[in-house]
Amino acid sequence: MTSEGADASRDDQPDSALAIAAAVRSGERTAASVVEVSLGAIAARDPELHAFLHVASDHARAAAAAIDETVRAGRDPGPLAGVPVALKDNLCTRGVPTTCASKILEGWRPPYDATVVTRLQDAGAVVVGKTNLDEFAMGSSTENSCKGPTRHPMDPTRVPGGSSGGSAAAVAAGLVPLGLGSDTGGSVRQPAALCGVVGVKPTYGVVSRYGLVAFASSLDQIGPLARSVADAAVLFEVIAGHDPLDSTSLDEPVPRVTRVLEAGVEGLRVGVCNELVEGTSPDVARRVREAAEDLAKAGALVEEVSVPEMRFGLSAYYLIAPAEASSNLARYDGVRYGLRVDAPDVAAMNTATRTAGFGAEVKRRIMLGTYALSAGYYDAYYAKAQRVRTLLIRAFERAYERLDVLLGATSPTTAFEIGERVVDPLAMYMSDVCTIPSNLSGHPAMSVPFGTGEDGLPVGVQVLAPALHEEPMFQVAAALERAAAARAAAVPGGEGRR
Ligand code: GLN
Image (cartoon, rainbow, N blue to C red; front, side):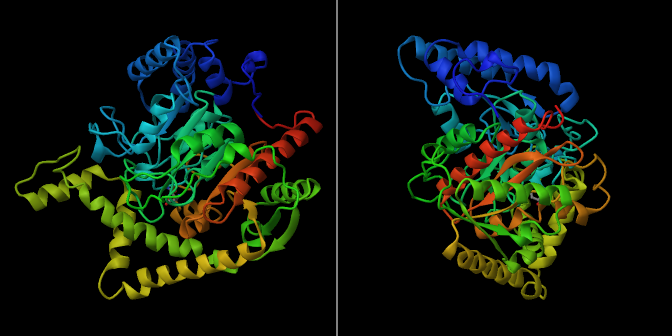
């Protein structure tokens, strides 16, 4: 747990976002000094980790200077005053390279900011750089990056998870207090679990996707990565809310998650979901059971539930997501963005550009998706997957008639070795078996660190909730964070590897 309050530097933990914002707003610290600490940490540690694809030092220093000027003028820069933030490199940043870790976008500088970027800036946050990911967010380990993998901060032979592995590693290593990722099938929650940080996938439509480079538009959501539930809550409130620039954005009040963190879980109905425990490794399953016990001790009404339809989630996802990707990625044609490989005619130029520009996993998804959507196969694959999606949504609805939240594992295992799953795409796809159901249903879900596995590496417990019910979700997450801290304090060395 990060310590709160303006004097968080009293221990060796990096400062929380809340502590930094409080200190900058009060004039006790300058945003300029905070940003130098972050840039210094990146310079020292990132050559080993490779969490960043681009460090925007000049932009960050200029933004910090403007915030300090605001404070000096007696105005409030906002709830994230001076807080350094790392952005997954599929979020558009005006004038700053946005590559999606793909050769096909090499050299592209977006002419506009994503809505989340504008909201961060309006809240006083300082964007320090763009982080590594699996190409176009397709993957679970950050190994599918055209720039090479990111390494796990606690063990350089392991992956940080993915596809938002760069943001998760940057936050876990203390290079920045906050990061943003995108979650189409688990890409915020799974790396959060593997790196031992908090990761949130909001309800579909709560955070604007304007300026998020599209992977699978009916599933994509942007979400926070942070070292504490409280920091994640502030970031969530800053980026959430209706945006007329995104036609799928919900015009609903933003769930006030920062208000519920101390509310406790007395009387909340928690369902431990069999499908999210069975099939996970024994040490992960044990942590989920301990988490459930701790919630029961804190007054929650805990029961076991089964949502069998979840078992079909992975199969439906690997038809729907590639189908949408094959359509979304048609825009990279050598004309509009980045890379162009010249050839005698336009069709040959398109082919040469796409052949050279896309990596193997992206090509695999485009082929799978094109196949699933083609005449003669559409009904058997794509349409069937959509029907499975509807069945899953109804199954969730039934479960939530008597439960406030569901509980399960985030990832079936702790961080795996670099290279281990690259040769076996199905083994890689299985990494998201516990996270995908919430993307298909559009519901919110988040991962909270809860102890370690047998290897001493972090385990994440996942809290799932109905649409727009981020409040009970954060309430339970905060209780789990307290319970995990109590358990770690009770066991000497119980916090695992450092
Ligand atoms: N790992 C999953 C995939 O490869 C999820 C990716 C994501 O959420 N962006 O599709």
